[in-house]
Amino acid sequence: MVELETPRGTARAHLHPADAPRAALVLGHGAGGGVTAPDLVAATAAALAVDVTVALVEQPYRVAGRRSPAPAPQLDTAWLAVVEQLGAGALSGLPLLVGGRSSGARVACRTAGAAGAVGVICLAFPLRPPGRESAPSRLPELEEVTVPTLVVQGEGDPFGMPPSSRLRTVVAVPGNHSLRAAAPVREAVQDWLSQQL
Image 1 (tube, rainbow, N blue to C red):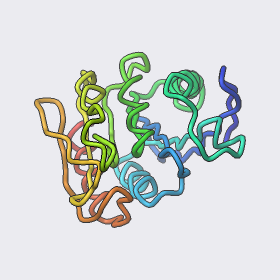
Image 2: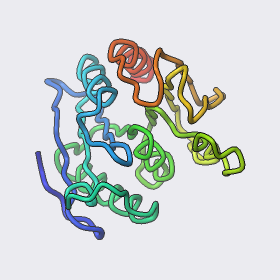
Image 3: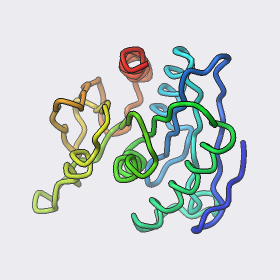
């Protein structure tokens, strides 16, 4: 675990190095959760199985002990600062993939271009808040991504199911927004990574 200073405070990166890494995957957590969420653990195992080093990033608000997430611009600023430092340090020289679960997936999508990512992995992308049909869709955040993208979504996710597109693979797995079934998540991530690398 390394602590990294950002314009929004101290972040943490939990590093899981592959023995002979071919790429690096930086993953962020959901709004109210941490880096031990079942789907993040499953994605980490999947990446390591195909020689991809993983960094699980805790946003500064979580490191500071707050449960409520910071506003999107602050999350994005902190995330980019972490990715830049990791890219210059522990992940130097490796092709970079970014991603996360729920809120972390949104951050990764919004910043993929600025981060220089070659791919994005979204776990439980929150397309639209449940029960708020009038709320704007977050699909534009996915549509802005110009590199290959994987979305792993629970079949019963109340936030909805994003559509596939030319660059976006959507895999529906058993479960809801929490994605607690580790095996299907791991399989989806591992298969996609194997095709990309």
